[in-house]
Length: 270
Ligand SMILES: C[S@@+](CC[C@H](N)C(=O)[O-])C[C@H]1O[C@@H](n2cnc3c(N)ncnc32)[C@H](O)[C@@H]1O
Image 1 (cartoon, rainbow, N blue to C red):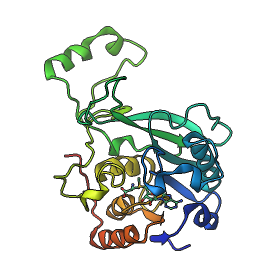
Image 2: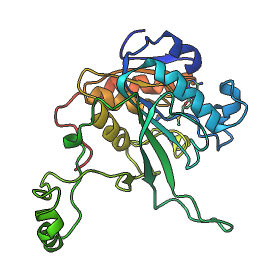
Image 3: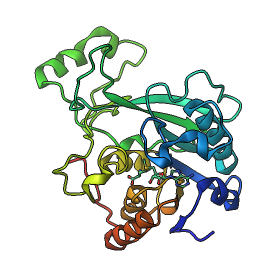
Image 4: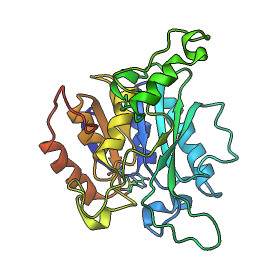
């Protein structure tokens, strides 16, 4: 397979052509099994008969073959997307990240409305890359409170005695409320039909690609949609391969990638 290509077809066939132990990072924004879209019907697209969890377990098995030791997988889904499955023989779960979307319409009447997606951050053994310096976010505490915290005994004399607040910002943590889902008004939205179920914000993919890959690394997006991961990879000088069933999306991806430019300064976190 050629690097920096998007292949049209079924990822379950195409991924067989990817070499074992070859991928640094997989961004997997595939079916959630919650909409009526044909591509979101999980039982049609794997040997699974039991829904999204078994579907995801099958993906985890497949991905563990192609990931390098220490390579990372970010698997997107709803809150229950890896419940009651045993992924531990294949990959290590570093963190469940909550992608919090406070603006999601809260109209549930019989239960609390769900207003987050889950992003499961796995690695094949211990993660080989975690570029914290590239993904720090501003400290949102007032200066006075911050200084007071720096003086508390556990910070000045405790186990981590020299701990200081870092002027370059803090670890983004595992609740990501600073990245908004695209709206009708977002400049990067390709078309209204792609809102919510398809197109992800570049900012979300930027954090993931920066955290778990370096320039020249190989990033795979097996359900690449309209190519957001590919666009970010080009801007950050990562190599990429993508798979996508829908030929129209493949064409859109090619157009988007054509326009994207590498820049040392690229960041949407300003
Ligand atoms: C949620 S979208 C991905 C969106 C992408 N992250 C973006 O920002 O453009 C999931 C995509 O997976 C594709 N898809 C679903 N099943 C597939 C399969 N078996 N092989 C390849 N692509 C598939 C769908 O056509 C859809 O475009």
